[in-house]
Image 1 (cartoon, protein in one colour):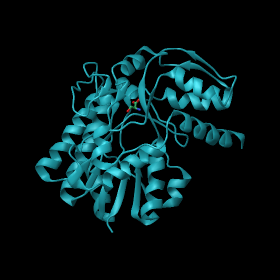
Image 2: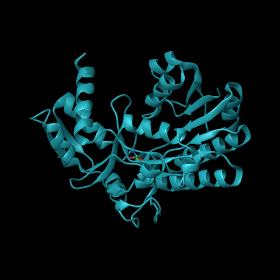
Image 3: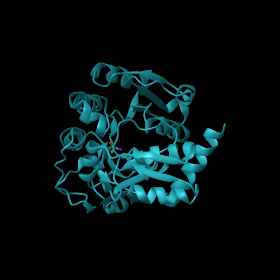
Length: 318
Ligand code: SER
């Protein structure tokens, strides 16, 4: 069997996707790569790990050839707030790396998974029940790179037959590796602060700001599911809206209070991230993913909150 390459493997998604893929396909089948962040012991113990810079096409080609790679999960990315702080770097990492990966995939006939995001929408997008196909026009560098990525992946599919597939992930909530520099990260921070201190005193997104969210196990499932889907059923390819829940900060706070009754939240709104959040959907319509490849999330706000609090409490008690 051809092997799987995961780029950006030390990030929030990669650090959990690699073990999930290794459990499913075998340790030897999955090659993990990262750039600057140090890999966890779990990543190192589970199989091959290499440092590569995806903005250098040679690094990708060498590894694809060496390990006879058939599928690439491209998780190399700079998230929204960090991209606003350094737009030039964000373009280089998010677009040029993808272009390199697609070029290598064309030559070596690899399938490519690339996540897009709710950030690929913008202020002119209908923000409620955001359709699969609609106005995008994001006004952040992150969003611009992600729309460019969606289009580039479609182009490589149509022009060269590269088997590109992708989803638009919402904010992802997880307890293994924290996200870095995103707008939806408040919904991760809140759990850490709740479990450690019983309060979250600097929620940087304002009350009443709805955003789509998803728990990590569902996000991993969506990536694996779309790569395993029957290609004849994929009408959209890049990229399918997928969501699991939509809430504002006060809703997650209320849910946490059911487990930690004294929990309190205070707001210290960051204007940059607040503006980004307001330009993103309140709730996407993901019916195309449900119809075309059977997407169904398992976790809602209540079940995710229970699991996050149990997992983090166990960790911080040690
Ligand atoms: N979680 C991402 C961010 O906030 C959205 O895709 O940047």
